[in-house]
Length: 411
Image (cartoon, rainbow, N blue to C red; front, side, top):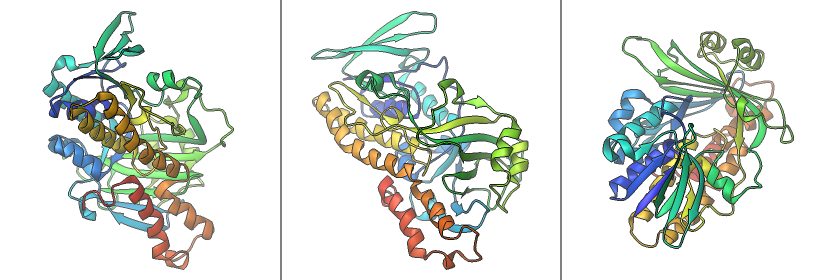
């Protein structure tokens, strides 16, 4: 069997490594000129990290990431709601990692290049069309200089992101991604460590929110951490036109980000306003997803990761679910049976599971606990137990963990 993968992101590269480990030939085609350290900080959950650990990537990840120790939910004004231990501190055998997205992708890409060979991951290859026969699928790729290339295989996997060419082929009328009116200002800077140096803070609900966590330490900068921050502000509703694709990662002036935070967000652990001022590059992204599809797999072609189930960046599930997709699909293809059936079975298993997460994230996912408390006590409180019972708080957060599949995956 030979598997063609359109997209050299986290999901596509992980799938290539998993297929290689199972003896399946694979080729990855990435439209970017190179695979570099692009993006911002993300968290990857224990059940996904366990899959990367099985591939032998844990030492490389530890070298560039932080093991997340604790997640603290707060109101927009910094009042504590609930704190959770994470990863090994929560009893999992695998850690949760806070990491720069580009560094995570880089670790997986380096492993794929080393194990599969230099030619197994080709860049500057944008998928422009594909054709399926009874026995194979042929994909056509184009480079930026106009040259086209053809490659044939047994199956084609669309791991080509929220603007997936393969998804658009099967669903040409889907329109642009769905936007909830929230814009995200994101950046990272070296900054004095807060709390234990490995904790994550989410303060504020879906209308105005701060997300803050360290993503790297450096022995030459003791007492500091590369600190990732996100300011979310709801500036429109479901009827507001989505920003154009050219505005999806536009650079923003410091004053713009400060204006979204000042008067709305404050926490005692660190001076978020000074952190924003210390950030050299600030980027703006719309918070987008897409409606769940009735079908991912079509004969010898299927979708994976953001191409299949783009979701709001809530609950640390974007990259994590792409990795779980890859594991399920690799196992089925490696069985050596009918590849069309393997893709159909993967669809039947993973599509409902991820659709439920997409739907939950639209209402805040586990962060809904913040909206819940703020609605009950809009003027604040001295003790959260006067606002909600521990069982009420645990139910919101715990139900989401069950939904995402990691509350019970690795204990």
